[in-house]
Amino acid sequence: MGILEVKNVGKRFGGLQALGDVNLSIAEGSVHAIIGPNGAGKSTLLNCLVGKLIPDTGSVMFDGQSVLGRKPYEINQMGISRVFQTPEIFADLSVMENMMIPCFAKRDGAFELNGIASVDSQKDVHATAEQMLVDMNMADKRHMHAGSLSRGDKRRLEIGMCLSQEPRLLLLDEPTAGMARADTNNTIDLLKQISDERDITIAIIEHDMHVVFSLAQRITVLAQGTPLVEDTPDNIKGHPKVREAYLGE
Ligand code: ADP
Ligand code: MG
Image (cartoon, rainbow, N blue to C red; front, side, top):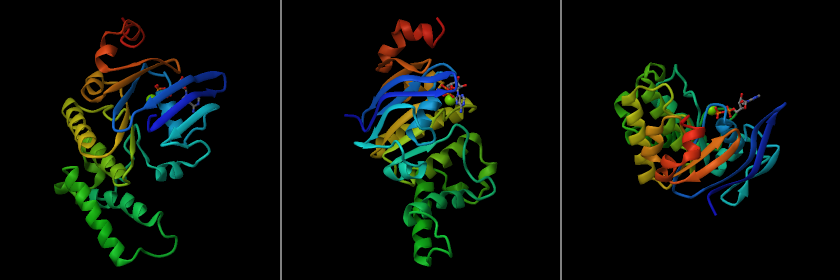
C-alpha cells in the first residue's frame, strides 16, 4: 500500500474527459514523477488530490484515509502540501515574514480571529522560520522583499514555506517551469536534499526530462487523462510507447 492510493479517478469538464480512469500508487519515502504532454491531465489530477477539484468517479486515499469531500485546508492538515505552478508568495513582505506565515498557521491551527498571538508564540515562530531559512540556505536573504528574489529563490522560499507545515507528502506542479538552467539545477539539488534528509514523500509533475531523470525513482506517464505506463526511469527511457506518445518519436 502506498502512502497515496488513487483508484479509478475520472474527471470531466463539460464535454472533455480530462481524466479517464487513473490508478496510481505512490510509495512512502519515494520521489514519484508524473509526466505527459500538455493537456494530459497532470494538473487536473493534482487538483483532485488536494481538494481543489472533486473527481466525478473513483477514490483518493492518503495514509488509509479518504481525502474526497474534504476541504483543501483539511487535506493540508492531513499532511499533504502543494507547490503551485506559479510561485505563491507575498511579494511585498520580506523573506522572513513569508516564512513565518506557515509557522504561525502550523502552531496555532489557524490565525486567531481577534488579536495577536502571544509573545512566546511569536518567538517560537521566529526561531522555526529562521531554522527553515537556514535549511533552505536563504538566511542571508531574510530581509529582502520576496518579490525581488530570483525565480529560483522564490521557488526555494515557497518550498521552505511548504516544509514548515511538516507535510508527509509534498506535491510539486512543474517547479522548474520558466527557470534558467542554473536555477533548475539548484532546485534539483534542493529536492534531492529534502528527499534524503526528511521523512517525506515527493510527487512531482515535471516537463523537463533532466529534472525527472535526476530525481524520480518511479515515473508515471499520463496521456489523454489515462496512465500509459508506470516504471523506473531506466525502463521509461527506452519504452517505445513513451517515446511515441511523449517524446514525439
Ligand atoms: P496538464 O497539466 O497535463 O497540461 P491539465 O490538467 O491542465 O493538463 O488539463 C487537462 C485538460 O483539461 C486540458 O484539455 C485542459 O484544457 C482541460 N481543463 C483543465 N482545467 C479545466 C477547467 N477548469 N475547465 C475546463 N477544462 C479544463
Ligand atoms: Mg499543468
